[in-house]
Length: 149
Image (cartoon, rainbow, N blue to C red; front, top):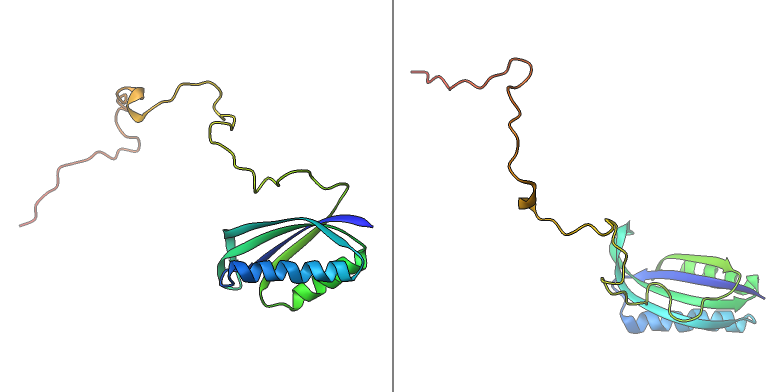
């Protein structure tokens, strides 16, 4: 049997319990066709980069699957029919990752490497006064406004 990672997006107006029910439904499809589901992660409601079917947010869920291709195809067929599933993606992998996925790892802001190296923090007032740029090019000089009477 092959190993897969499967992510799907459910509509924003379904509840978290309905998302769990969808996960259980698709888990049952996989198991009925001779496969098994390992790690299941519910990533929660997240904003989408662009609207999908008038939805600005979606519930994300990840499943690690060990199943024959026919089981995955049947699950995807049922997802195409379902109105609650906006998008899905299944990827064949060599082996499943251990521990939580990158989406579930809580990263502290101090743990990330800085892009600017070891430069000290700067504020807007650190640059000093702005040098004079001289007269404008093209002969446009500002004249006082003439009042028309």
